[in-house]
Image 1 (cartoon, rainbow, N blue to C red):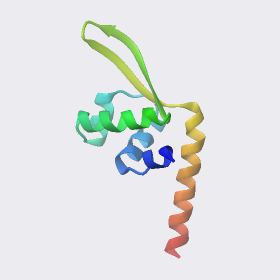
Image 2: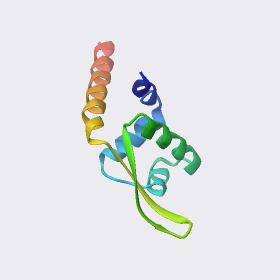
Image 3: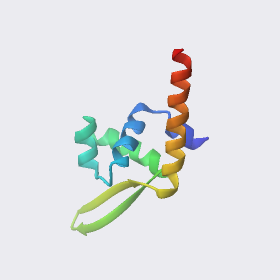
Amino acid sequence: MKILEALGSKQRLQIIEYLFEGISNLNEIAARLKLSKPTIMQHLKILQETGIIKKTILSTEGLHSTVKYEIRDNSKELVMSIRKACQNFVLSTES
């Protein structure tokens, strides 16, 4: 149920759509979606806690870390199935 709740946010779905294009970092996601970094961080935390995405620390220099986010391989199929089901539902209600 937590996964469905995590996918219940328009912003989190936008983040997932963007991450389907490839691995990204906080700055890139915030710029692309035109949302504040704190807002993006909150959504990334929820997606990470539910296991939909993973966070990888690539390097650390002093106080700064290079962090990348990507969709977990085992979550891609689930997210795609949910997306398809939602699209089919919308198409069936438009008739």
